[in-house]
Image 1: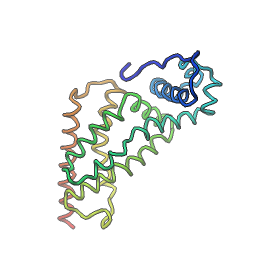
Image 2: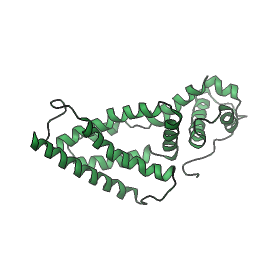
Image 3: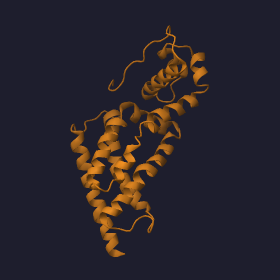
Length: 221
């Protein structure tokens, strides 16, 4: 599987500025961990990068330091600040906002390296997954619950706190998009070739149900 991958250049004989050298190491580590998982040795990574292991350790004294930088670059760094404003912009229908968000998120975040490193991190017991889930719930899923409430005419979270089942409903949509790329990059099985159509369908199926249930709950209350 070679999609979205490129071999890091051999810069053994190049004199690079420290910031550029560090960035190359991080980029190489992202590709390396996506292929080998977190059991991959820094010795092999240094060999791939065309540098010595002591030079690698000069920038990242431990393997965990390097993993932490990969997390910042790949997961935190790819989260775009404007996505939060997109979700909460009530001048547009919520359906359109969700479609636009997942279109951007799928293209900018859910790459071959992102998906594979996320899965390897979970298997290795790294806390990357737990921290990213916290980020998602804070920046995306809880705001989506609030917007579903607003669209359905339900009480705001300030008046009635968001329940665990509401949060799970927001996870349903996110999980559908995420699993599309798991099937593509981990299992390498057939997926719907029209990503745009898949996102629209996933949003419609999930949002329609979420709004209907929220409105029924309002009626009961």
